[in-house]
Length: 279
Image (cartoon, rainbow, N blue to C red):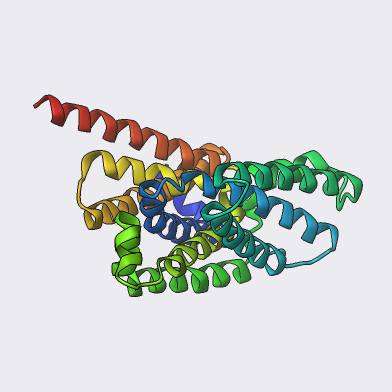
């Protein structure tokens, strides 16, 4: 098995997948804790559907690098969803449901009316679940992922204290005169960037799992915010790395395999937490 793995590592697309997978998982875990604690978990799922619609539109318009359209559309939607959730006739959860379902429908309709290949169902499956994206990553994709990852991690570390404060007591932050809305927008933008990063590897339907599962796993066994963030990052990176290796050796879809690893770790952490309470 080790010889087989060493053989596969000679191929550039395998190395690209490992780099993109680890960086995406790391960035996802950092913001996932904040989303779970602020009860914004569903926003990741909604934005991933919007990103699918934008990617479909970019494909129809024959835009080679779909990120050029997908990234700004997803960021703008994240900002609109956050503002809508604060004060609007349509509340946040309803707005997310409307945008996500609408984007999925529009994206699938565009791909059927203006097909870019003879296998529309295969294209849709690949975009939603990342079933073949692992072999289509290019050096440009990897370089873009590295740049975006550095930006996300740098911004998170730079504004760590503010994000921590907004996560636990937004009203107190507002009372101190600090613009809590700005930091909420910052979190939303970072999540949008992470979702676009991860779509090439795990697909638009599974990217939210990378954001939520490691955070929930870490929160079940650790209590401090910093400890949860660190533990979530370790879990996420290990699951992504292991999932990609298993998918290569067993010829399974990379995205689904990574998520299955996250689910397995979640149940292990859940059992550990139950045992600790029993003690």
